[in-house]
Picture (cartoon, rainbow, N blue to C red):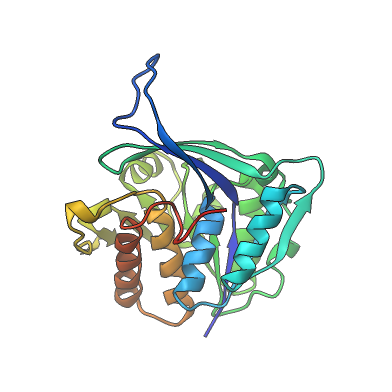
Length: 275
């Protein structure tokens, strides 16, 4: 059984609920303010660990109370945090999130320490055949590129969640097996010249398609949907865990879809997410 190394962001999510999202120039009232654990990288690391994987994370937090609390949280969930740097003079990343009555979210990310994750091939040292490097794009693109190339050279599998969408060098995209994208991200990728080794497109409740082979989503009653924040991250974390465990495409996709569906039934990007 391989292990999962997650290269990505750690954010403190400041979340409020609104009846509906404001139009440009409009003010709406929020209900409550919660301080939750987030960031695509940490969300995916926690999801992979919850799925049973041996997980380590590479990233950065600030030398502040929020960063210290987050590291302790990850340790308690079985994530190896020895690859997470604590940076003096940089704040831990934050995200401002509003969630409407339909459970849909709008997110603004303030990178903070996430923007300082170093582009060093040594951050993936120790990866080997059977291991999985899982990346997203809330850390510098050059860092993702360097890590993906080094992991691939070591024989590890590169799983790339191209979110939030940004143009990566075509040779880096070509290493992704799979590249995970939602419909919007997949359309942007199609307009580029980059072609991944395999492409997994997610369609929310409608399921997903991996190189044209579709799988239905796991049904969730409408009244059970509380918050879609982090559903895609739960999907990616469970997918990486299944692949590291030796699952085939069908098994890995089934596990990922189930994790994504479960994620919309609780508030916040992670289970019990208060920081």
